[in-house]
Length: 205
Ligand code: FES
Image (spheres, rainbow, N blue to C red):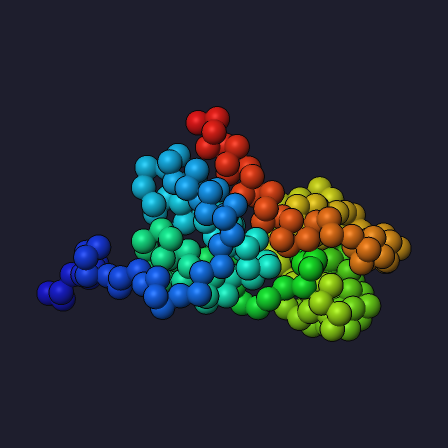
């Protein structure tokens, strides 16, 4: 009989990073928000998701290794645990630093039937980037994504907290012009809004 899979006990897992090994970036406001959130969860582990949103805002929309290490340090978790959570959810930007606006294009079944790939090809050509790339001016990052759960608006795209659809070449041109001149719906703004929602939900609880 084979040996049962052995799951490491908490004291056997890697320790959290040490403060002296880190260059901490959280602002005073971020530290206060995190302290408020900590009081509304049963343990520090439950704070990983909201703390990642704080970090995504504080680090300019990107969860670099440094950002993940700071979250691990502040919540007394191992780096591996925080990295595992952050890389599981696609809304955390861990693969690359996004531009000011992240445009997510759904090419899943309903959207593809309704022209999702035409939208995808149009935006790639218009912006001159491939999947996951950012325009040279740092304004747009383009990503192809799975179903955004807004199939009734197919073909649909997501920018920040906005779902926009059905889109076509004309509406996309207008949207790009609007976003170029705007800080609204940016990756940093979206992270901040989610932090505020977490704080408000905690206060209601
Ligand atoms: S298939 Fe595109 S939102 Fe569902």
